[in-house]
Length: 200
Length: 200
DNA sequence: GTCTATATACTGATAGAC
DNA sequence: GTCTATCAGTATATAGAC
Image 1 (cartoon, each protein chain N blue to C red):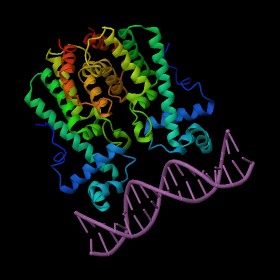
Image 2: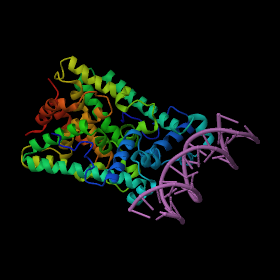
Image 3: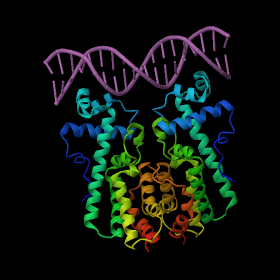
């Protein structure tokens, strides 16, 4: 059972043509990047008209923004689940990393778009991904662990980096094709040492 | 004494106008991104003619490539120094992280261009940054530490991620402005725990 | 709301003088 | 080698019919 919807349902809460457009945008932006993708290519891939996208998304950057917000919202929902299901920083952070690994395998393009895309270049108004609700909450799990005396009392920036840094590194290596096998298998080895380096 | 040349000398091994162009490119690409920067802006900033640029760099992507190769070569030289100066994985990897932190503070734009830029989008032929000589060597320091029995015998991808992941995370947070103080100060706390999580 | 045909603006690149 | 003036191609966005 995947924690994240599969490709066919990832955009399930929007209308059929909206979904088709967002899927095309995700696929094309990941493959060639925002600036190497023309609106005409998007509409051809999504099988909708130019008029449709300009009416519903305002302009090209509106496409990028809609996708960005959609994916971050999804991520936030997954964090809700984790927060509701687990009570300790140990379990929450472990679950976050497990979720990131699973997402990387089941939805590599979504992960790629969230983590890698230089959103500032085409979404000047967008907050840096690190300032985003989802990432702030990931960091909060760590901060709360420190307050609760579960995690060693060190600078929260360092603690956050130690907690998620190695995991994110593995995700990036996997997305870049440097690692050519699923990273789920690395979880236990990684988490054991990560948690050992942070627990009080 | 900086391990990395300061802004005024970073491009010291090229002619004056070359240097002016590379500086403009680095500055503009970091500020606005490759695709939001026109060749005209570059020549205006560098105070050279369009003809000069096209004669010496072939085309726009040639500018990006020249800068990329230049910075990676510089990075490689720094790794040479580290390899020559230190003999153990512990000292080498620690020195690498210290160097990355220092570079982040003294040459944020160079660091930003190396780490953050989606080079594939405008340099299709460029190797992924992770496949690059410099990064391969960073990983080799770790692999050799495992062979030497200095570092725990775990998967080298996991070991590499644990070694550099947190450091790179801090660099990214600093470059994104999420951390607003120099990260040099985090080194001791970070390194102590990083090494503890990996030593045999 | 939806579509197609069109225009405007800009950018990368070159031609050709010096 | 260096420069300026210019071209040709493309892409975003809109106008206006339905």
